[in-house]
Length: 383
Image (cartoon, rainbow, N blue to C red; front, top):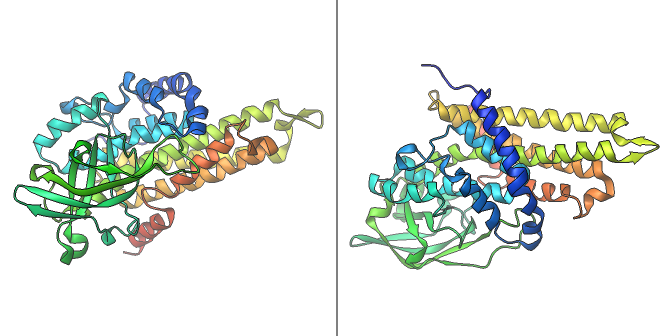
């Protein structure tokens, strides 16, 4: 069987060019304002729905496009290049639906996946808690069986799209005596009594709402158990392995935006009677930024290709962690250098590179901090 490589096909290159034009025309014009106002990027989301982007990661049998992971990575990168908040809005529903696609009953798939593909509904992924971020086994949210339902109590923190999403994929303890083997996964609708805390006032991704999701005696039908009782930890890790490469793509997009803007600025800004692009020290900075980001892009494509190929040798956990970790570290370094290249202007909100720098930071933190990614990588290397 011929395997997918991480070199782009002609179709993927055409898709990238189309997405770049779309993002420049329909997403980028809103980015600065929604960041300043910390409001949901509704106009950008609606434009993405019109382009049928929510359908990319959903299988064709459920109304989606069934796109390969590299194509989905291209989408994440190009949207993030224009607006990182809009990019995470596009990614979060796929994250919330991955457990449904890979573990849920056919009934749940038929009910929810077409709504996500059409953009009619959005989904969130509820794993982290105040005292259980990277330490998933420490979660306290409980689900207690009651007849043909479960009663859900607890709270999830730092949840992307909280209050906006219609469905919430929630991990909760069903058997507290079994540690991480006692965690289960549920699909919960907002209208079943879910409430939300105030939106966090964040440094970056300000247009992407983040808040606590609160469950106070929320009744969840047994039909909405994803997988079996006790499979929640496996579902969570399986899902994160397959979503981390797209965080790498988001980071690559942020870094590319910083590179593009800095390069344009260097050609226009005059110092000592000539453009600062003629100064060798600054040219070398830009070259290093571009080299690092190209490595990050290639690592991300490699991790995506493993997903497309079914991960035959079990390498995805390590390469997904590597892609997410390296790309996000690169995005932070590149955005910081872009601020430096613009000098005092780079430190003001009149220029977008300070936003790129703020947005880049979260990619080192969410979906597993980069310190945790290094733990994962070392564990794989050392057996």
